[in-house]
Amino acid sequence: MSHDSWAEPWKIKMVEPLRMTTREEREAAIRDAGYNSFLLRSDDVYIDLLTDSGTSAMSDYQWAGIMLGDEAYAGSRSFYHLVDAVHEVYGYEEVVPTHQGRGAEHILSQILIEPGDAVPGNMYFTTTRFHQEHAGGHFYDVIIDEAHEPDSLHPFKGNIDLAKLAAVVEEYGVERIPYVSFETNVNMAGGQPASMANLREVYEYCSANGILVMLDATRALENAYFIQQREHGYADTPIHDILREICSYSDGATVSSKKDNLVNIGGLLLLRDPELARKARSLLVAFEGLHTYGGMSGRDMEALARGIEEMAASDTHVRSRVGQVEYLGDGLIKHGIPIVRPVGGHAVFLDARAILDHLPQEHFPAAALTAALYLDAGVRGMERGIVSAGRDKETGENHHPKLELTRLAIPRRVYTQSHMDVTIESIARVHENREDVRGLQFTYEPEELRFFQARFEPVG
Ligand code: PLI
Image (cartoon, rainbow, N blue to C red; front, side, top):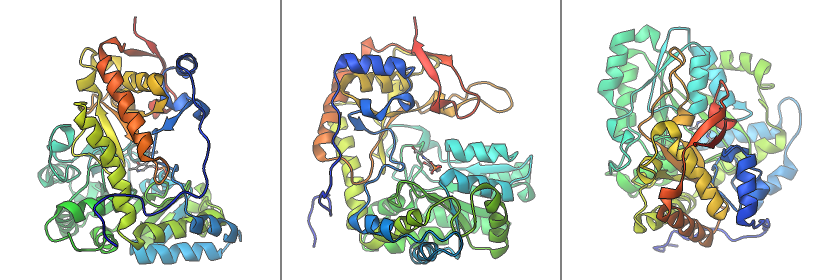
């Protein structure tokens, strides 16, 4: 069946009521949360766009799998179903299950990175860089310059700049580069894809130099969709085949299954080399769980196997998923609100630096905008700017990312078009009154991944 709309290829079978709050209640809630949206109670949130991670609605087929999950400690039938689904959809031979994405990042970093190594990657992700640095590595951003420009309409802002990569290789030598960390649909850049041509070129360069390429395939499905829409020669290729080709240009991948894979918990470390997989499993039993569950229950693995099958079974799912994100983004553009363009795959990113141009970056414009948005109508977003970027491990100075963004991430199969309309109206109101938004300052700054638990107060 073909139609022009991105309309959902599903209907609603069960609903979860939402609590509506008053402005006074929201004022108290955000103050109690130290102006950090991570510290709000979900009962105080109307439309929760904090993250698309672990917030998907599962299908009836997945929920049926929850009842059928095999809870055997070792050799669970659900694990073997998961292995089959990964072989079919991603194509990696070795499947190492983990409790979530950062579990896979931890194991991968520990088996490959030696202190003093360099790990080039296309923009950092918070937990990924944490584990690379925790293992003694030094992260180098080798994404193309356009990724740092909110207004650049480059269709593949997730691409790696080969000259930047070659410069790191030149400086360190191949023996000090355990792998290139290549994220699909780069989260911190605004949900921006890499092109197939770039994936292929990076893999060819690395293979020729004996350097591994490890994908962060957390949102590879959404990347595959953009390749189909934007890259010459892929318009008629099914998503399933594009996804397989993306993975073919890598030696392994980490996956947070809480995104593309349509489950609420789970992760994967996927490899080709059996020896590397042996090392991973050897650490897995200490940090995650036995190699046939890795921190997931049998029912989690059953739902995950089914989620992986379902996401790639037809092109309509991802089209509708990204279609809804684009609907929100296009609505904001129509109201003249500065956002990162092109609209990303999993979220719309408000350009807080442009919207609150009366605030210096030291007063955390993206965090302030996120709090102001919650106050207006109970819509919860997330800071993705200087607070998330944290401090340099060596100098202790704040990183100053060029992108100072408030992210509105859309859970999969959860909200309706009218929820998106309410969100657009609320942001337009906040934008109208943007002069009134005050900056924030820390009252508590955690040492690691500070954005999660930091507390603030208004400046002045
Ligand atoms: O939250 P985890 O541990 O399952 O996955 C960590 C993780 C790894 N890579 C990428 C690209 C992510 O986006 C990611 C988690 N993202 C979160 C929680 C988010 O809100 O975007």
